[in-house]
Structures are given as structure tokens and as C-alpha cells.
Image (cartoon, rainbow, N blue to C red):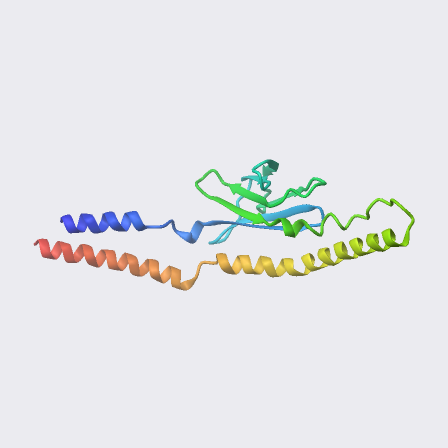
Length: 185
């Protein structure tokens, strides 16, 4: 009986939460704003859940609640904030975050045309180069966004082997219990 109690205690201590209702967050940069959504691995999206975006130093950039489709969006300030972490909290024990690195924001500021300062050819060429770099960065972001979204969805899906391992864990624990019961009698 002591061994059974010890085995159950070890199993309970090493158990991890079920992934069927695990919350995930997908976020991307589009122009001067961040948009994305939260979703559960087993399917569905949290409606009306609180979200907050914080900069690299922990300062609050924006906050709000997800819409009916679990989406959120906010505009960035003029200065690039460094890394941005978006956290969604359902207040039901599900919390998830997504971090956008500062390099994802590098092309967003260059999309706007810089202020004209001098009428020299070098400054005009520099403005053209900066504008071109911003346009290329925005175009690449638009093209890779579906790929990033697909990777996030594939990484978060509930796999057949995950379900089988859960079933076999239950069968194994039942077998240990039956073995202990038979040994006791």
C-alpha cells in the first residue's frame, strides 16, 4: 500500500497540465502596428480575454480585451520599443505569451518617408534607400506571415501520439492499481 501511495505521489508530482486546452498566442507586425490572436490547442479562441503588450523594459505599451475571434491589435508608438511581449490571460488558469523581437520592427519606421533636410543628391539617395528598405521589409513580412502562422498552428496542434500516450498512462496506472489490489489480497 505504501508503494502504491508513493507511486501515485510521484505520478502526481511529475504530471504536467493537459495540452488539450493549452492557450497559444500568435502575433505579427504589420506596418506600424501589431496584430494577432490567441487560440486553444484543442480548438477555439478565447473571447473577451484580457491582453497586455509590454516593451523590453517591462513598460506597458497597450492593453485591452480580445474580440469574438480571439484577436487583438494595437499601434506602436513612433520610437521602436525593443522586444514586445503580448500576454493573453483568460482568468481561468490559461495564460500565454508571444514575444516579437526588436528586429521585426526595424522596417516599420523606414516605411514612412523621412523629412527632407537638404536638397543634395546624397540625402535624396539616402531617403530613397531607406524607403526602399522599408518597402522590402514590409513586403517580406506580408509574405512570411502566413508561414509563421502555419508554423505556430502546427507546433501547437494536439498530436495523435500525445493522445495515445495519455491513454497508455491511464491504462498503466490502472494496471498498477490492479496489481497492488491483487497482491494485497
